[in-house]
Image 1 (tube, rainbow, N blue to C red):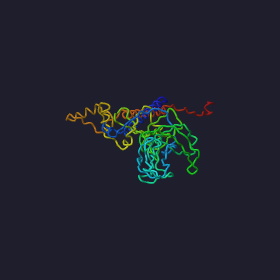
Image 2: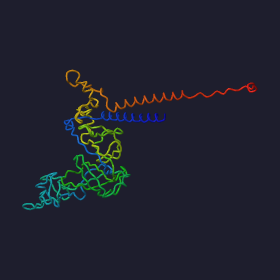
Image 3: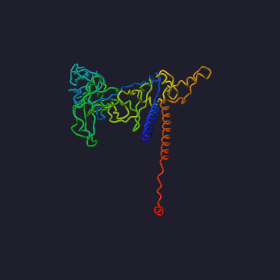
Length: 397
């Protein structure tokens, strides 16, 4: 009897496992987007393989570009007079020694004496404040030249994070004006004084700016690298979709081409490049990066489940994804016109579902047998003997 009940329990567990696997497969297919090659190209989908990596802990800060201290020169005249020629043009590049302004002195002479003001350094002409014929005096700044070959980036971090930031620490700087470009450098210095109003401390660094892409006044973003962790599962930030607790990633199907499964994930730390994934992914998964946002609005895709499975496995399937059995093919061709008349969906049970039904039937039979055997044993028990009292008269006889 005990063995029979044990067998029932094992069979019930097996049936439950099969049903769970069948349900998981159905849920996975329901969350899959099927595309053709044109759909993949139109959405410009790109994937990367997930692997454990070194994850950088960062502090984010907003900043701006300024002129590097000492790299701005003001041009003025040591004599009074008037500008007879202005060769400098605003925002144009000059070399050290290039003539900028010709000044005619007020001193008498025939002709009056002239001096030529030249560029004191390589750079761009800014703050031009003189025109031909205008008066010139020693106390008037006529223009300035700035050297922007090295940009000066300044940001402010909250004082409660000051202990994480140190001179010489690695930092990445990006600008919305140059998408996709990153300047990697080190922290040059920290501010000597904190701002008591904003509760922040200045952080500054030097950026290579030979192309003069970065101009004073441009906003920039700092990612200050404060630490590193190894063996972290992380994906590019662009791969993670959704908000709050509903975060998900699209993963390439392992056996169906151009099929992408929506996988819910749990995120951890985030830096300027990657998002840590604590649950939901395995090493080797291929996640969609570029095009993931568009894929979220693609619905079920441009290809049906049946078409996708037919192309992937090389044989026919039903609309629900199950294989077409021999009985279906025979029934289809027996309709009389020689064409295949398979049911449009749901008529063919999957192998897992069929096993589940058979298992439930066997389990029911075993339970009935166990119940009957229990009842039979209860009925076969012998009756207890009845003790009748003896009379004293019989003993005397």
